[in-house]
Image (cartoon, rainbow, N blue to C red; front, side, top):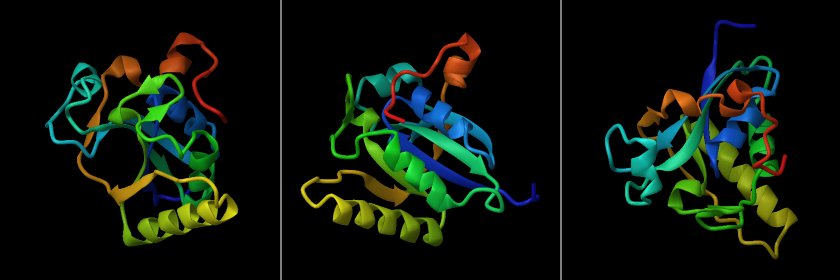
Length: 161
């Protein structure tokens, strides 16, 4: 492992399953679930669930780029959710469950846009609704949401991948 890590942030529905999927990736050194790109400072889960704060449920992924590329993380992101459903993933409905990639650098933005375009070209009949925006302030979710499935000894069940 190198001393250099990078951060990636993804919104793909309920953050429990998204976090569980990214935690399995060799080269991912840490994850945290939380709320991003909204208008309320330090929101709670209850606040975000009102669908009035503008936040997305996200997973902040810390990774070692010498062991896993950002492009590999993007490929997993596309695989584990449905990027064609606006403000919804499965039974979870609301803007907090939207599909989004929140970038931390120009290189990430370019890679995210290229991967979205490649997906759109591969599936021209689908409308990809994933937003790609600069990462705004990240607010960590309450402790009981962190590593939710692992803490409970449960198998993640809420995502495709």
